[in-house]
Length: 201
Image: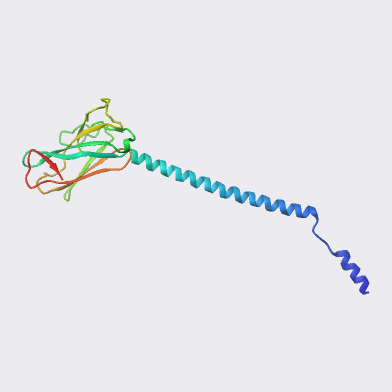
């Protein structure tokens, strides 16, 4: 009886065949391939997003205005009437359209103006957006209304329509906003006495 039992056990003993081993190995390879493809796809996607972020940041930096020289205030002896500043393109980068707005006659831009650069005024008392301003090219340039790399424009910003008289000891902020890029903020304080022309610090 014991011999019969041993023979039966030997007869029922099964092992893994070569075909089964091959199927298991193929399954492992397929799973590993899918996992590797997923990891690579995620890495490529992240790299593309990083590249887009870098290019966008560079475009914004290259489209930013920078101040050249002093800020000059022009007054009538009682209040500051306008500011004169020189601007250029930062990093000698993108062109910026400096087409002037149409003046409403009160120192602010008209609603039908085609300007894309917007100038705003702020103090501790008031804030006024879309001031009237003019721009003239200085030095070498091609004579159009585009601020090209290497060119300098002189902006004259009217302060007659800001909603208050800009007098002595007054701190003011001028924001110059190009269509793309960072805002150029010019903060200055008027002196103790107003002359016709003053350099503000």
